[in-house]
Picture 1 (cartoon, rainbow, N blue to C red):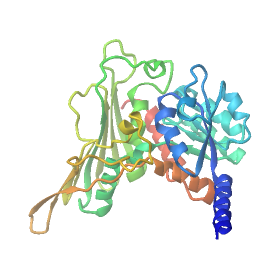
Picture 2 (cartoon, helix red, strand yellow; picture 1 turned 180 degrees about the vertical axis):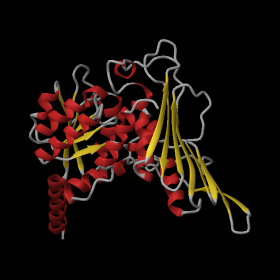
Picture 3 (cartoon, helix red, strand yellow; picture 1 turned 120 degrees about the vertical axis):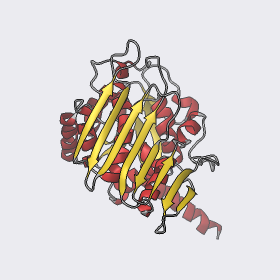
Length: 357
């Protein structure tokens, strides 16, 4: 019996080794340390193989077995690495993703994917030519409050949707330390390219490509050169109007989502806890990970056929960015379509690069 159990364990371990996706991360700043490494290291379908650290070597403190390369070229030359995560400054995304694809790697690219549509089309062409997959990192599809919103819409309890508002706000009067976000010499600058991809992706994932849109951005912080406010009005069939707003100068947080339909309304604040938990050092395999504190439930108000009002609170979902990495695994190993589709990102880029109207 002991030999049988031991043999089965060895078989499982060998299978895991074969199916695990060896992954390299191009930076171990906040993005790599908080949003990628914890998931790659705890998900049994992945192996956190290597990272690029150009100056300070910090990854070994968290992951003793990781290889720390001095340059991207060194990491791309590692034949054991299958997936490369491009989580470097925005303006480098196109070139670094291009080099990784040409080195025969699959690529997961942070938002904003690229500067413009021309770069996007070029990357897709290279991906197809190389026979390698290009994945897009849109983790906010797996925020708890967005999953709540999605459930309410899919339930049909609101009737025909009429008016939808999404917001992503912060209060940061001072200019950011990341130079590429504050300088107009870089196309993907300011809040539009920073927080805009989150809201645009959420809207597009739910409603698709708008039939038309209007866009407004403005600069309000002293000495700022780039937008710190944006507002999109997306027009959809059946008279659906979707409004997306982001600001760096909102001192009193507004609801993340406000929806109105012919049969009711839904209001939900930005309550997902994953980013803060990850910053605090919690790993995704912790039983408490992604669970909202009590009392933050979204409010659903519906009107019945007798014109009576009913109020209830929606039980929150568990936030889970690991679903994104699971989708990558399923795509690479089981040929399941990745849910964050290229067409959706192309529409997002078109809206980001558009001039104010």
